[in-house]
Amino acid sequence: MLQTGKQVLKKASKGGYAVGHFNFSNLESLKAIVQAAQNTNSPVFAATSEGGIEYGGVDYLAAIAKIAAKNAKVPVVLHLDHGKDMRYINAAITHGYTSIMIDASSFPLKENIRITKKVVILCHQKGISVEAELGCLQGIEDKVSEKESIFTSPKEAVYFVKETGVDSLAISVGTSHGAYKFKGRSRIDIARIRLIKKLLNIPLVLHGASGVPHSLVAIAEKYGAKLGDAHGVSDTTYRQAIAAGINKINVDTDLRLAFDAGIRKTLKENPSVFDPRKILGPSTLLMTKVIEQKMKVFGSAGKA
Ligand code: G3H
Ligand code: 13P
Ligand code: ZN
Image 1 (cartoon, rainbow, N blue to C red):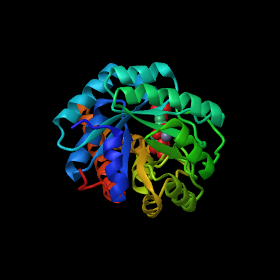
Image 2 (image 1 turned 180 degrees about the horizontal axis):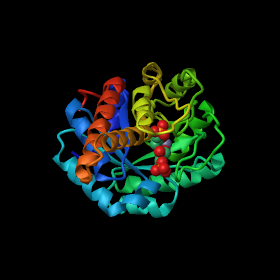
Image 3 (image 1 turned 180 degrees about the vertical axis):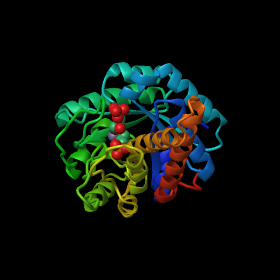
Image 4 (image 1 turned 30 degrees about the vertical axis):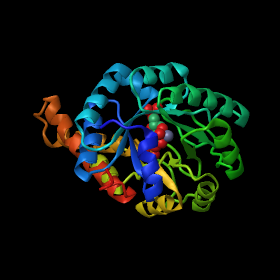
């Protein structure tokens, strides 16, 4: 069933667990997300970034996600990830998204508030939930530009939420987007999460939160990938972050790694295979397993 971000996160905040956010830009990743949610009886965010929309088309992506949500017994939130340009935000509204992230975090506080407030008013009129970001995460993705990491100030967070009326807040506490987050052990500012949660008591969001599991990196590398010193967030760190107040965890890179590892392995081991369904099927299964494992660690399994 299709639900809003607010509906799903209110329960998570009360229950002390986190709901996984997974990015999709094709049928395979969307199917893996919803199948994993069904298999673990978990709520889930299925999200498209601006780059994902450019790739898949907002009409196609929204249509498959809404059909999957309608057929699913678990809550599915259709979410716009890192909405920066009003064109994508308006398109998401038009196509029935139930949650929108406005990311004006690269602007100074006053401008971030002004832009966020405008989007909150627009979305709330239509019953759509809004996530915003305060502080800056490092990292480079397609449309998520390179930024200096600036941790979220708890004092500013209180002011920001009061001024904007957002439903949830993405905070910067040491993670970054992509596959190269930490040198060695994952470390994030748990005390900062705890303090912000205490002051705000609204659902907090952790971006740049892929685990970059060694098992996936190893498969991809065995079959030809060159990933170097890739490191992500450990299961222990997830648990600490959730206990401190995180209720939504954003994962994209891990699905990319699973997709890549599955394709490389299949093609290498089956050189005569050229049917796309046989090439992509194992990747879909691998992504499903990765997502199921996350749902168990995040504590959302069994909470649908
Ligand atoms: O938050 C970052 C996501 O991984 C989006 O990446 O802009 O390449 O789709 P993308
Ligand atoms: P990762 O690159 O760690 O998967 O982060 C994804 C994300 O934050 C999407 O908004
Ligand atoms: Zn992000």
